[in-house]
Length: 347
Image 1 (cartoon, rainbow, N blue to C red):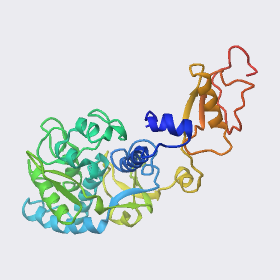
Image 2 (cartoon, rainbow, N blue to C red):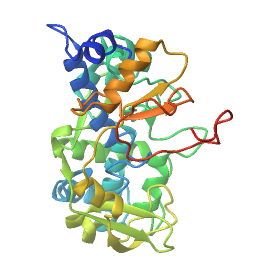
Image 3 (cartoon, helix red, strand yellow):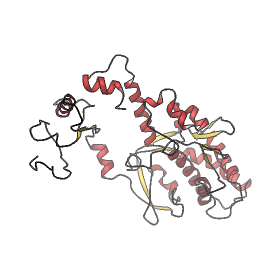
Image 4 (tube, helix red, strand yellow):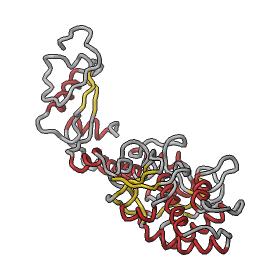
């Protein structure tokens, strides 16, 4: 968002925003969206609070257990899956909801229209969202909701071409101990979805030609007391709430259902501890090169070495030999030199 005029022209050059500036509201929306993204459709990418074991977004296990109590007899009586046990159903429903969260299928005030039509192009370019929303497209990470029937732009329970996550996960949990009825996946999931809606875990989004489903944000909680489950082969891990460990022990891996989580470790590491105790500051980077005009370079130097730092001042410079000996750049915490300067090694 540094391209916006109120930032580039007013805040950086004059240290003040114009009256009635839209920038603070856009920054607020962007930060809220970034928090939403880091715990949903970006939760398995990079080092975020979820992947490092610091916090996760999760439904309450008691809500899932109540839904499982309703679904279990339906599986026994309606579908004839007599071998399935209560723990299998809990694993199935928990993994189903976890996958929806990781896909970004969580209702958000900005996504009411998008959740029903799945048009990512219109979502990112209407109602002023292009001013604050990060770039997203069909081939980049973005929220994807669930449609039980086959529909473009949405996750589907089954596909005529390849096995979907939902079908694979159903067979890895509910079908772990016996045979499953043929071509019943959509109907089985529909029963589960209706139960989860009654428990307030899922929301039905009316749409044409078929309804769409997503997680109810009011049923999700930010949990910081985590335990890391470890697979029986020791290669995979899953961060879960500490009070859900007993119910989830033995659950298959969401990405590798052939492995089961049978051991537990501490979820936090040195990175999580640093997030808790460290004096963290956002990095604002800039280039210091001969391509900048003299007044621009000098203004950049003044901001970089200012004794009283504003939160938006640059604190990381990528410099060519323009930042040579004789230029006052204040105090430095670290320097990274990439190759020796060609003209004067003493620089």
